[in-house]
Image (cartoon, rainbow, N blue to C red):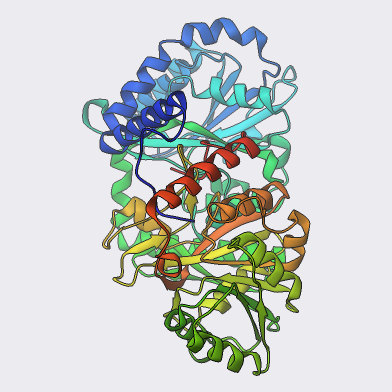
Length: 576
């Protein structure tokens, strides 16, 4: 993986280049101003009348059962929430409201008025469990449940977009969307955009938040159903869902479907509330790990309420074959090898060095010395540089079940880096894992790769701390990404065999992206952990390559990827 090349006129075809520029401008405007995002959505909602005419063509028209529990909410807040439901264009919904005995007379009067006005509003006084108290319409062939806090509101067209996704994929069991906050005078602010289904990120913290729509038959199999009326406890239910669904049964709708009342957020600074949330979320994670039979711990992260550092215990240390392609650059190689042998806290390492035509006498002598050491192989490969072919040759010569592909310009800076990576790599659902990479001056270089036109880019490239909270989240949680950098990539042998190794048609650029695409297509996750950290001198091992040659490699490899993976090109589901 390489740094973004400069745009040049003789590169990509004109139409593709203009499309890429427009995409980047749009994304930049989204980052600069949420008002721009809201304006774009407003233009889209002008099509709601068309959406209503199109409803008869929906393959599925399930009942959406909206659940609300009312206790201390004011009549004004409640009015906003209920009106947001009544304004939905999709007609097949039911609003079930459980009213606590502490509700004020004004709230009760307001609710009774709504119930008389619309038969789809069902009010239960002190029902205790509105899920059981509300009647189930016999005409609905399937039902989805969603929870609405009385101080919040559904976005316009939210239910239609959910049903539209269900019509496209009838097998969906869980759907969730993005959210934002409602400030003074109803101004939308503080957006919370979310990635596609990411079970490892969910294990680290509840990134889903609100709203989420769950099929009733799945909901009925969960324990502690009542907890969904308490946002501090619903995390347990979402973790239970991860144990009962397949990745294809969960869908993220990349639109804001829910508006939070910002007055609600004041409770987050209450120390007692924060302490309770930490305790409840940790118990939820521990129970989840126990049910799954995963030997791991989830420790709270100081200063990040609701976040957990997941540490996977290795009952035994599997042999890790570290594969390092190299050519001359003795100082880089010596530093890398010394770091592996003296600064890595992992006892079972096999080192395989692919010497791709070294000619310097000092390098040749050093490689000869390494070849005589135990658990070290030095393989001579006299052929034109092809990173994919070198990695494949090293993998077939390896004896370990865990393969770590490592650049010779990597510097080991933390002793536990390999243990963290191996702990994730041995999880059966993980296909590839990579660490946080930094430049030697401390700047962040890599927290995954995002696949945006005109070519893939390093996530976090050039970031300096402190970061904004939205970016800093990536430093607090293991998370799924579309691809990772090949400077340090760990996988299992069975995964490499399943995908056929690295594609040797990509000798220089984006072979890591192609490998990760193949891993994801085979049904595995690609993840990044910020808790394993290394330094990477980008381009240090190939500084003699001309910029024009690098640009040609980027462009040719980019076109190859686009032709090979058209369904994933420019549509990164994990980019927020």
